[in-house]
Image 1: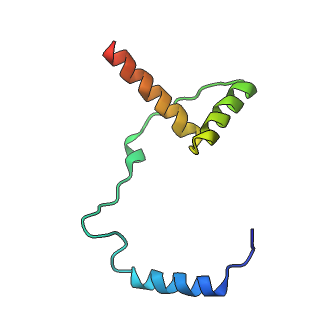
Image 2: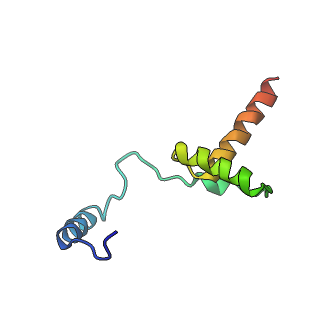
Length: 83
């Protein structure tokens, strides 16, 4: 990875940044912070092998491991509700 940014790229980014100062989001789009609604944290102990297995699956799906595990938990809760 380069330690310095291309001067041409830096200039283009600076121009784009200045042009978008007034409207950071397109009209009609409101930014949200969905994780602010999450207030509880669960700590789960996994062996090194279990953690590695979770990480491999997450990497294959291009997701953070925490997102993958959260999706698994939510899917299971939906199954339990339906049963």
